[in-house]
Image (cartoon, rainbow over all chains, first blue to last red; front, side):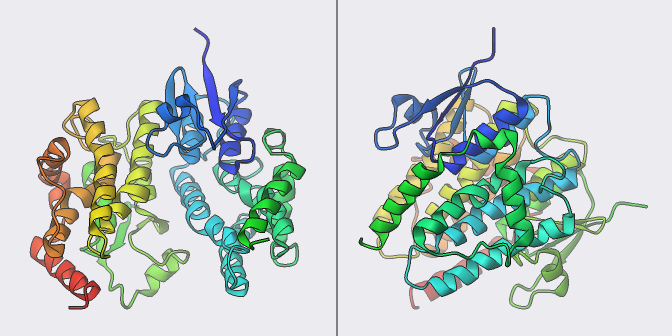
Length: 220
Length: 220
């Protein structure tokens, strides 16, 4: 029986794109199922009853949720280009940074533009981004994963692509070449990777979404 | 050169105990370094500059932070009893549940007793615990890990031990045999495991801590 691989997601989600990037890296063909989050499918609710969120990967009928768990699963279940480092210590460092991105860095940068005290929010976001800037500086490699993208690069996809569009919509700019020379260069290289490109939502569509989002937040 | 394994932690922390349990399961000897969190050591600040938190495992001079990252590292770096399942899908399920425990379940049960609206907080906590109750029911095994404890059991250590003491201090009880027959039985079995027992803080000391905590919260 041929492998059945389905991905439930939405085109705008940076979390869903993570799963798509991992599938692309391994060269896995999959069926992409676009969810309407305002009217979730019975399949999505059945496959992810705990969170009721995308992405959900369904491999031969078995569902896996949570984007980073999906990325690790894809790395475990399929051979080919490794996504996590092979060395246990480097694996731990990658997992630590991926968790840091999800729990500290992205929430800090998402806090900018959504409340009045932007000065403090920007300082906090920059402090978190500096951790990643330093990491790239110390490693001296093109990607967090080395010569090729890996778990941390995939985890940081929001910073590489979505964040810039969000800055434009919010009218706030702090992720600059001056402040973050390594990280902005990394972002350029990352979005141009073959495995990444076709997973990204069209810029205009994403910008429209954020314009509406900030319009709502600011009561426009 | 013999392996150097140091663990920076505090005896009261359920997160630190996770690392100790994993080390015990693998039979690894380690130096336990008790931190004073009100006056953190320069070592701790050096080894975990991002979060400045315990636990930190230092293996041959290399630091690893974040309790679940440490547990996975220990499983990756040392042979012996496996902590994560070998099957990729079961590994993903274990990682999903461990993440659920940290992000949804434990925060929900910690919210009980810290604000006035306990009725709603208890309902929410019970809904999250029910996910774990159902998981044990479906699996039909003694532990989440099967016959032996694994990643999910270790991740749920707060529920097995700390939570009951917290309930006593807060004067609120909802984690009962009636409501959660499988999960309360699991908790009893878990705290009696050889690898778990000696990692748990003394009951009286923990109770004292929580009595003080709730006294403070309630303005006593």
